[in-house]
Length: 519
Image (tube, rainbow, N blue to C red):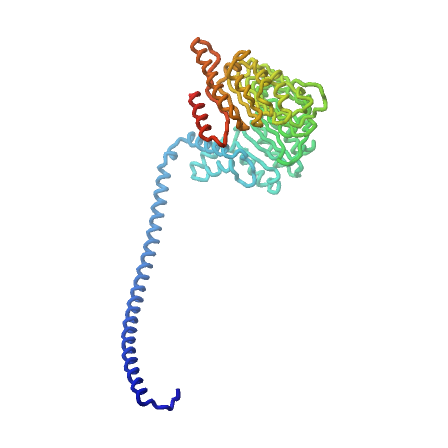
């Protein structure tokens, strides 16, 4: 537009009307702007007042929270002082502490894996002693609280002086109370300063129970080997020796066992039993060597000959030296409970037998393809059929006519458990034989508990045969009871796994009927 041009005529008229309209709009906009500025000012004033109110409210809330915490603390302190445990006599308070310790032991089987001070079990007395002066006095005067001690020598060695003082405190606070020790011993360590070993040996002199874990067979001149010798444990009743996981095993050829032992658990390692004196007090033993090819049946026989009064044996013999073909009978004249895990060559299933005339409980774990002939051999030769009351058989053995014949002499069995490895191991004739006398008297007439565990059977006849078994035996038991006869007895507990993925209704019906038959 030319700034020097003057509008005239109709253009001037239009411009004058536009100016008039714009001036009117400007006045209206200015009026609205003033109202908006006034509203904004009022809002800013209200916001400032609200912020002041909020800040005051926050300060008040903070003050109330502090007052609440102070009151809660006073209530807690008052309730603590009024707590019934405060009124307990010291003897009962000490028993509460000991119950706490026992609960920790039950929850922490590996309770002395010592990688800090204090840890798990050893923390119990320290926590109790830190609550108040009375608790501290009771804890320090309760020797039983300080009777569980554990040492991981590999962790202790870099901090020998504080550990030495710690063990000295334990020895003083436990007084003459019998101790339970777990020593994890790295046999490659042999310090110049023997103060720690003196404290460990001083505790061993009062130990009743000890678990020793070794990294290898220690040298005869090693301080650890001297710690293992029998004179170090004059009161020991229960001893467990095992290898630290993934470490070496071997023969502890000159180890002396305390004659006071009633329980021995020897795992991974083996002893030169020919040089061990007879142990007349030993009642319970675990023999589980893990030295492949070095322990023979003859070694087992020598070991058991040193335990004339053994009553409970757990035997793991899966890596035996079986080069000798001479059958070996393990003499256990007083044995009452046997748990055996065995593995023998296919060509020598009769290599190992037991003579246990007082046996009443046997658990056989024969999880090997050669387990069937071993199981039949032991049933026919070793398990005291006239008196055996409980039998558990976990094996590849087939539940068939051969097993029925082997079980026929076991007239005193009350509990019988089978754990077959495959579903095809169970034969219909086996269940039928248990249900009906047939050509023989009723099998296991005193049987009240029958369990089939392990492999699931899918056979259509299995659940029907199982129900017939329970129904038939309980009918015979009822008839015998009417005549006043003591046998056969009623089946009270039966576990039978039958599964058909296409018949959920049938499974529920089977389980319901089984419960009804047993009720």
